Image (cartoon, rainbow, N blue to C red; front, top):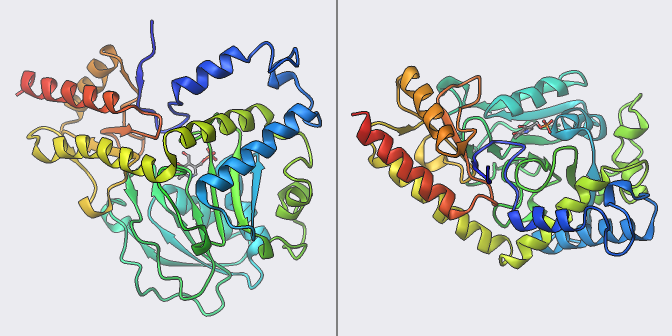
Length: 360
Ligand SMILES: Cc1ncc(COP(=O)(O)O)c(C=O)c1O
């Protein structure tokens, strides 16, 4: 069987070109006679891989000098604890809850101090982003936390909250590198790479350098201090070396596509095909407030669980994988990350149209 159109929310589709290149280098990475998987992380070859990856990411995102880039482990979920442990000096933080991931992060932060929920969209099953232009930000908040793209519910902040001068911390796992960002608006940007960038096991943290200090909560493990990893250039211990190598290849691929501005245009065009179809369909409906729709994760339903299940089954048989919605919401979800080609979305839309006609 050949490759399918993989609409998984993560781990997710990667650029075929990157996978082919990695396959070519699998047994002998550029004359080293070994795979990157087999290589010392202290070797010259690996140092070059991580340095190039870091520099390419800096270039792609326009990361200023006063921000550090860290390649860490533990997934995005480990950051739920690492962020408060490193940043919660006053033991007061503000979270905006727009879905399960922000909720989980807020619950983890509660272990370390007072967590105010500034706003939430739980009242409408997280189908929108609350108005964040004038929030009651706490006087002594160490930071305001958001999950910028909500993988499960398919919403995205189109405008960042007004944090009234407080530090903004954002989980960008499912919109990482999907469009340009102004890094200076954030204290910390982080994400697991397994959606838009690489294989699971690596998390990237972009953090303003003045936030990296020894002044962390008492008892913070060495491995969970940003300073440990920053001081060691992300090589304090054995890093997720193969993951970093693939991330580096994806950064190169993104540069070749024209960078993040070009990627945004492509993603907008791609998502529009699917949203336009949903908006005119009499069977399939998008579940998100149109103004808050994500370019990356597109949830939809027919309104009939049996029909949803049949659609997912028939779609799978036709080569469209992983369209089942998250177990907590049901229905369908098409994740259309950077590496999903336009043809994948066109083919899916054509399949949906046919399914609709056949099941009237
Ligand atoms: C937005 C967001 N944050 C956090 C996570 C958790 O990531 P991890 O499994 O790497 O801990 C996910 C995973 O799907 C996610 O979508």
